[in-house]
Image 1 (tube, rainbow, N blue to C red):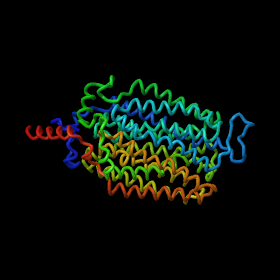
Image 2: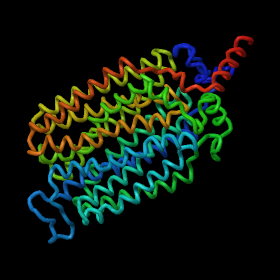
Image 3: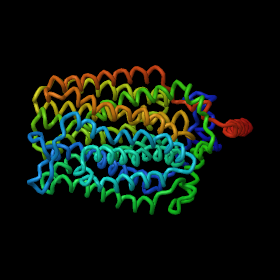
Length: 487
């Protein structure tokens, strides 16, 4: 961010240590309250609440959709049920991520070039519209439902890369953690609301109503998004001149599109980037295991009714919502006060989140059928684990702000692989519906978390990488340094 002499925090990070980055004076900071950037974060928060509602609704609805006691679909009731075994359910839970894999990198590349607002809006709208067809696809058979869920994932895959591209142009460096964790915490809020609400709707209106209500909510959100969101503070019609100048000056030359050309080979050889990729895969394994399979665990092992199932499956996400948001504020504060460098902050939050999450997952596997201990340990695992939001998930915008959308597309593509594999593995582990099978599920997830924590601690970095700085940026940095020395 610029100091009083106009020096940008992004301009010289390659040549100088993070601890020597100049900070903007407090009198030059534009307040967040009622600002355009905070409004954008709130809109994103609601958007991710919707998309995660669209993503997890099948997890709870599946309990009502499946008739495990009959070999044919139930035809004698107005609400149909289907004879899908544990393996089929695992494939249907993972179907979303088959489509989700394919749009991450293209969306990151295109949103980094054109801007992310249209991609995010269309991603949510398309996914919501497809969700409305879920009851029809289910009646046609498991293969049709698998294809529909994969298409929904294809549409939703653009949302996170688009978000990262938007924040690369909208978030001042010393506000990145709090703005991005606020918007991203909509995912936890969406899961927290959707899980119990889905259980309630299934019990009162029938499971088809779940998909009509969730799909309709997504379509409604898109109306507000297209009316108020914009790619860049320069093109926003409702932003004040003071806030626009503050954002543009604090981000510097990194807050622009990356053009058509990207440094592919240096990216492939970047150790910090690979540390993010591997760690995100490890972290997502446990996250997606809980996201897609927790309602089944609550049903098969805890024997909760569907309404209680939905509510108790949602409790961990309330803690995750609070801790992910607070972690962003804490991380920004530590960086702004120069208590730790950016690298240390990212490593610290990731290490604590992953190791704590792993420890409580192991504890769940030995809680037996104790309802209180199970819900407590699951809540603590998701809650403390959520502080990685200010760690590894923030790191790609640290190392390459200009290419942040593309990097998120790359890391999220790899990070989505557990979303495909984890539900299927869970289905195989728990085929006999016993606690022993679920213990394997939790131990595997915990072990993978530990591996990710070790890799990120050793190999990650918080500095802008040399391949992320083009010649114009280097010239601008040198000009700023010369100007600073002469005044």
